[in-house]
Amino acid sequence: MAQTAFAALGHEGRLAVFRLLMRFAPHPVRPSEMVTALDLKANTLSGYLSDLTQAGLIHAKRDGRSLYYQVDLAACEGLVGYLVNDCCRGRPEICPQEASLSHTSPYRVLFLCSGNSARSIMAEAILNTLGKGRFAAYSAGTRPNGAVHPMTLALLERNGHDSANLTSKDIATFQTAETPAFDFVFTVCDMAASEECAPWIGQPLSAHWGLPDPVKVTGTEAEKALAFAQTYSQLFHRIKAFVALDDNRRIDGLSRLSLQAQIDQISES
Image 1: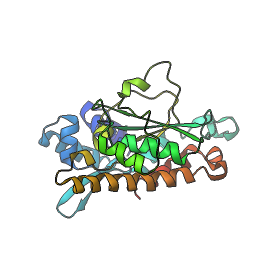
Image 2: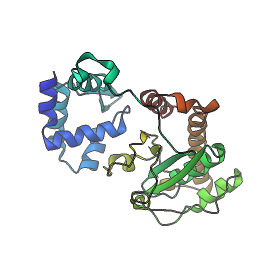
Image 3: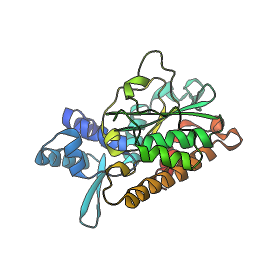
């Protein structure tokens, strides 16, 4: 299986598809979304998906009339195990141990979306409120709008958040050599998750907490306000669960593997 998997990943196009699916893991992705994100022809993508499926790296699932693809995480874990099986020649005492999260208090968290005018801004404000100094939250956009949406600011102020310093920023703001490393990076929109960014300094834990963009909702002012309120409610629920992971400083004692599993699980709530 390992040789077949490595052969499949040895092709630039198939590797790009696999990396995209891995950025969304454990969530599935529709082929139409992959075509758009990777600028591929549908028949080309179909061939790549077939090859990756036959190699045991991904699998398809159907939901109604829609077909989705997702990474087979167990197979990938086995592939990594195959690569390091002979590590340290059976002497575990000299093998590097799985480390807990290393950080300088408070934990630094970055929320990413495309426009950085609604979802990521909300997440930044919510975490800075609920984190009570244990977390320092920031937000940015891969294609920032340049201004925070007025409905975002109004909603945050009604819910008691400080919005004075909230601005729409480019992701490049946090990719300089002078930027301190982040402990966590969360994407809150599919567009940001589908874009391949340069590796983050310090290898932060990451997860995709995708939500629909309330800015794109059309209709009456009441319908638009409802979309913003629903987005806020979902983010509040997830961030509350995330902050709870650090009750009694539990994050310090959790392994990276355990933390990753828990922040992935939060994305499904």
